[in-house]
Image: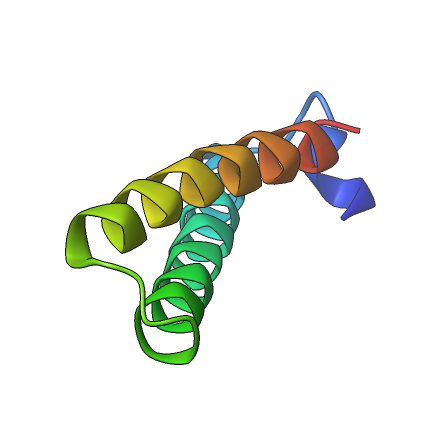
Amino acid sequence: MGDLARPEAGRGDAMKKWGFIALHAAVAATFIFLLQRFTMSASLESSLLWALTFAVCAAGLAYKQANR
């Protein structure tokens, strides 16, 4: 992860960073959706809302971590 913060990092490194952030958000959203929907038997709307919330939080954390 240290190579993401280099000033001379090129376009490829920036794409890796945003890919990492998107993957992190997608995994978090999928996990919480499946947990809410099938394990806790929540409604579809509630599951989607929680998935969106967790995706935004996970993306924020990944962005902060990638910029260290």
